[in-house]
Image 1: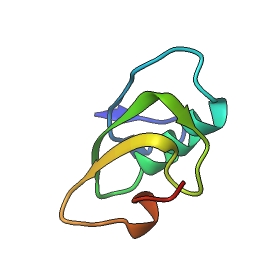
Image 2 (image 1 turned 120 degrees about the vertical axis):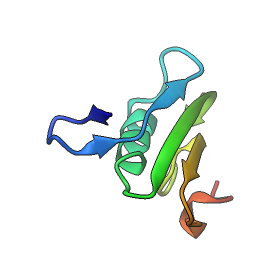
Image 3 (image 1 turned 90 degrees about the vertical axis):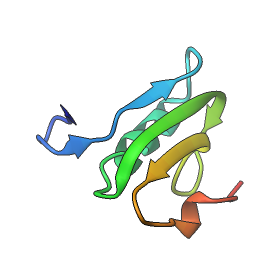
Image 4 (image 1 turned 135 degrees about the vertical axis):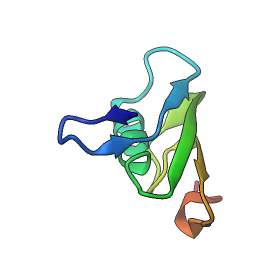
Length: 72
């Protein structure tokens, strides 16, 4: 299990690219701290979104997060 600096569980995610937008990475970190988060990914074109970064993929357990779907 991966934990962040506050000892909070964070779901693992893969970054598919280099030099990504720092805000996109921060948003993905926050999304992966949600209790329903299982796994994630950031695509090479990822950039800051409204909740989940644009170009971010988040797998969750028994949940749908409407704000993380189709907001660009």
